Image (cartoon, rainbow, N blue to C red):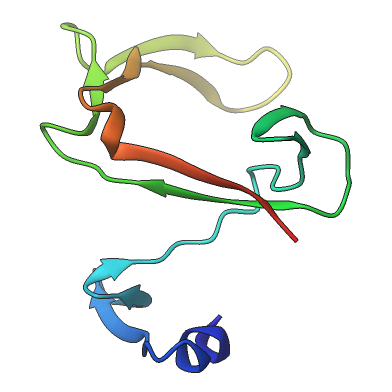
Length: 116
């Protein structure tokens, strides 16, 4: 990615975020996720399904109070002691937290689909 940015005339910077070196462009951190399928079928300008083909997708997300935010339920985090295990010398604890996401602005999320 650094080579591609340099060839386009833009240099990526490395910044320190919570003690880890993170690659950034114009002050915006760049993160890579292996959990999102990045190969899609594109018909015209419409993404249809994951197929394992040859096109890739880049996602851009802006987080903030007026962008994409996390939500938590009014109860916060609940810790419930279930009790002793019958087969081991240990106890079990269940931690529950209900959360979600809200998108306040459609301009805060984008996808560039069909990159060969």
